[in-house]
Image (cartoon, rainbow, N blue to C red; front, side, top):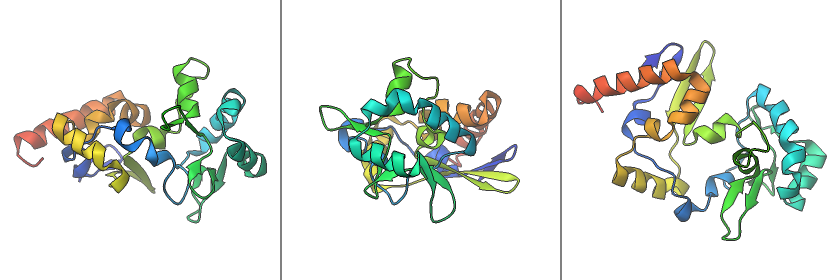
Length: 193
């Protein structure tokens, strides 16, 4: 573990390799699991604001869930997460003609229709951020559905923190990320990673 400001970072974030391989997984991380994606309190209003823009992209089942319980709910741990359809699909999950799933919010963002990218927890995956009082913990989450991403990351030699540069800066800021890069470089020189 290393610490930058009030953020503790697992060495796995620096040493493990990862590049999403959508052709292999078809976006399975948006449809598998036992709860929706973690959402920060301030993101709830943003999800509600983009809803009218993405509404027609959503499945009828997702629309029904949203009409009944909203865009988020509290999971069994009390955390705010995106609502899900049939116990798995995020309500913002959509499918293209190839059967790949994608985020309706991200699609609208890329098309310039909204200014919210998607929940930062989705943008950061496979990193999960835990809050522990005065500290945050940044951990690499291993999941079998991402095995192709691990293989591609190893082939291209891209560590998790480099693959996720943009969302890490979004979450913690540019100065913090630069410090992370400096620490990673020092640890490489010391053969720690």
